Image (tube, rainbow, N blue to C red; front, side, top):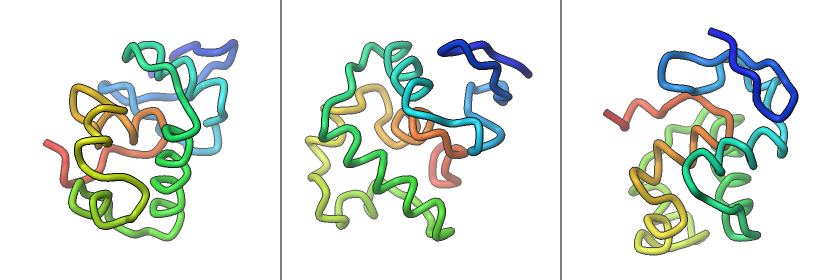
Length: 102
């Protein structure tokens, strides 16, 4: 389905995840974050960069992997992305929902 966000038309699935990572940009990320009541900080961007790097390298993502990343601890991850940190952070990062998310 199509969704207009940050003056761009993007393709998303029924859960709102981008279907084409090439359509992602920082303005889209900021708008997606606002939909989840998140104002992106430098720490958010650090996590988003980490997640995108993992995705580009075809490495699986999990909460445990984030915990062991050295980027942040689990409590901080939940604080930055409330309501399901891995689901919300990957949605904002423009990548598919990880298989480890239900």
